[in-house]
Image 1 (spheres, rainbow, N blue to C red):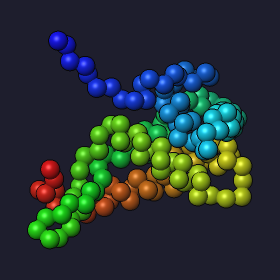
Image 2: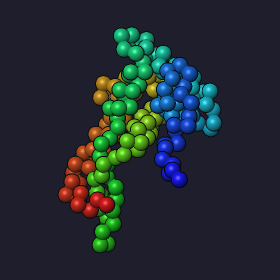
Image 3: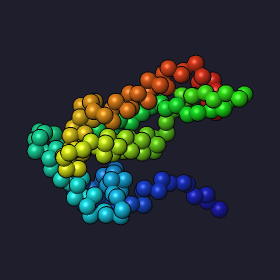
Image 4: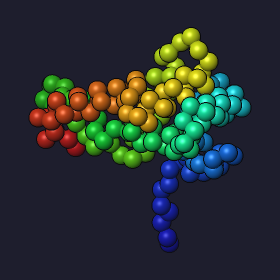
Length: 158
């Protein structure tokens, strides 16, 4: 009997209509609030239109994928209890978790700002992240720095 290989749950999603990308679909689903997918889709596509207007020489999907790729962390710290003490142990991040963290940090940075429509804040943060700037990139740098600082505890990794 053949064994089934385990696949990621997001591969069962259909790619989005405009860019035909599963990453965009996953991002829209994470952006969605209270089941309002049409609103989340409109916000994302309006942000892509604004990115296209601000950077006419670069395709907006390229800006989006560059932003997500730049935000992905290679290392993170996880708490590990050893002999009554808790240590922050640096660990490699699996690719699916890298993507999830990048999307989560990007959305947290956008939602943390106030005073403008969501699509404008999203466009600004995407452009900044594609240039390796912005709040989401700062979060990534902070996480990687913390992992580097705790390299002495890497022998506790499991």
